[in-house]
Length: 237
Image (cartoon, rainbow, N blue to C red; front, side, top):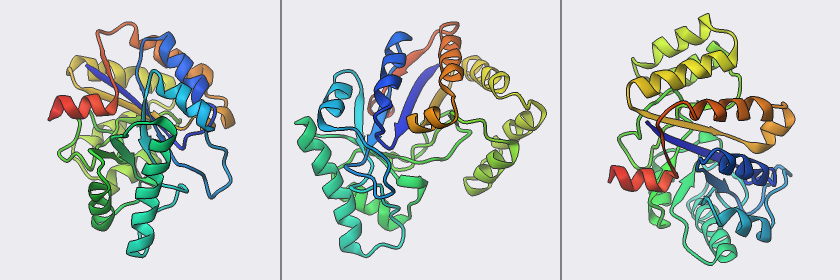
């Protein structure tokens, strides 16, 4: 089983998350905007460099801006200037991009390609593979106790027949951690990909740190190959 984690928005609590990932010999990709127009704090340069020592850093626009409907020059600036700002702080190129809010269209994908990224991650859940397109990388689960209704909405937006059974399982199993334990076991059984994603600021706000550590402990019971998203992309290529 390939085990991937990715984390959005570049909040300073990413450093706490990084320490936890290291504790369990797991890898992570952190998608970081240069700033956040919503006012949420982002990693300072020295914090970002510390995170970069052991983890992959990806782009997440200049200001954490949703990209649909923007004028072409604004769209290009958000993607390219965001990439340049993070690369200037790190001193090296970055490979991956994540669409803020999971919002994108064909123009957005073209602009991300043109900016020189190698892949892009979506917020499509309930997938246990790397997807068919490098620009539409899906995920398995967000680490947040979403109801079956929310999972069903995501499944309708990104339809696959295989997702229906997972939604039914969540409907039957209301306890989040038992549900996640069962999904990890299923991914192991099928030797597939388990891609966990989330936001460290959300772990703060909803007091999810203990649950996340409990989930990471579960990974110790399985033979997993922990990869960054770029490593997984290269493996697929």
